Image 1 (cartoon, rainbow, N blue to C red):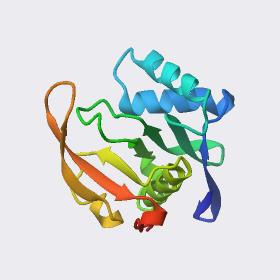
Image 2: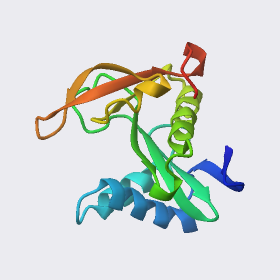
Image 3: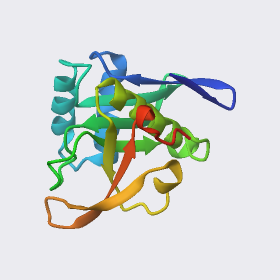
Image 4: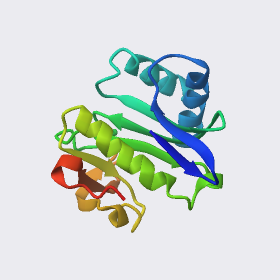
Length: 167
């Protein structure tokens, strides 16, 4: 899927092979979301995701001028207490230089389309960001608990077939 900001083409793609972008993507996911010394966790998870590119987990990058400017992942569970819900959107990131250009909204819409392709009718995420996801049609449906016992809001949205807001 291609988008543009400032006239420069931008593509959103799933990581489907260990190529030159793969290592950069692992580094970005880890540096953005991981803990010190935890790069191996991301590399292992992302490498094993390559074995079934039509399932979950799946990792995505937004690329502009050969630079990764955004990310997200579709996961079976986002390391929280709500093991009954799946799939989960995680690791949504937009490079600070690209913020304000609706890339985050585009990645959210892309995630819903990819979720539907995998046969799911809805998608979940956890975030303590108030007001952001709601403006794109996501509904707060309660809380989950992380591995430290802290609560975090759960958001839910439907895929296109179910009438998701694709802003």
